[in-house]
Image (cartoon, rainbow, N blue to C red; front, side):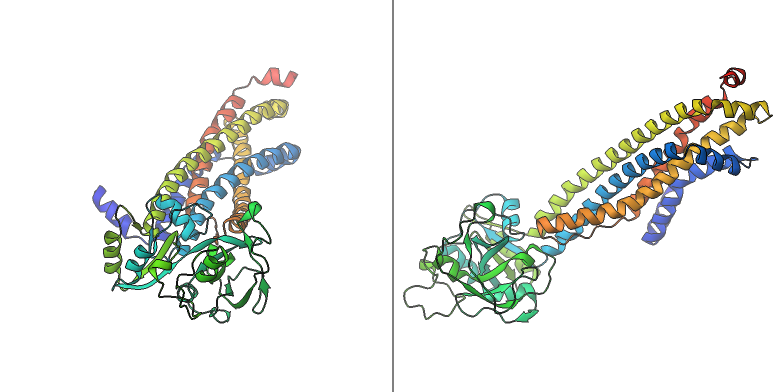
Length: 440
């Protein structure tokens, strides 16, 4: 029977399974409500109670909404970050670098994070470039910037592969031409002078009167390359006083082939083979004592697995935080019922049964909890949008997080759990001595 149930559950559409799980998590609250409210019409009295204590109710609802909204927003953000970083690495099938940290090399080569990496020499790069299974190989040159945009030296062939067609203009064909990413505030025909270094340490004017002319613009890719300026690798080498990769007889034509003896080095070579099997073969061939070959997607998957563990911890912390907030609210409700004790005792004196007082108090608490949870979801939507825009601006990875079924499941479980906890103040209120409360 369990196996048949699991097989049937696995066969359900994902949306239907999520919906059923959501309803199952909410079911305890609804069943409890049906039992507690059975036979009573407490609507008018509940409305009057809420109006009488409107500001106290608003404070309690706000506390719950903030707790639920931040918890759901942070969990959704983790998922949005995973979904945003994965497409940014799609074009980078294989990276070959000097031995070191795969994560550091990936962050530098794929996500353009400033890093101090050892260089691959000309002979090693030539072995990669001349391999019969390699379709595209591109060196990278870092170190310069314009405003907040990194200036990256590479080849026009790689820019064409990365952009799959420019949004404007053409690819660079001369040493001091450039292609701008979609989010760089430069248009075709504009010129810029690079600074040496990146960020606050950048040295403006270090390259004299050097200027690049923007001849093309890439379409939006949703990756950090949208904020980059791509230039010929030869110009990056030359402006830093290095060989240009071609030797004394160079005719000025940029791009491969490069002469190994005049190749200054590159922190990473971005490689695309002619087949998936060839990629695995190249990865094995260039994983040696002097080179490190890795798949950015695999490294990213390990990071995502770590983020998944963090997400689980965040989910537990979010639930604990929400329960603690609700426990505080319930404690506040117990104090509030003392303020309402005389009115509730009057209802008892007029003939209201204990269970009616129990139902009224429980309904008051659950109304505040469910209203706060619903508003918390709306707050979570706003929080995810705000946090996504901040992460996108700071990392240049297009993150568009939104609330989904996991957050709804979390909130549904929270509502049911706190509905059970709300039985305690209702029970204590039901058993308060009537005569003492009437006397105040």
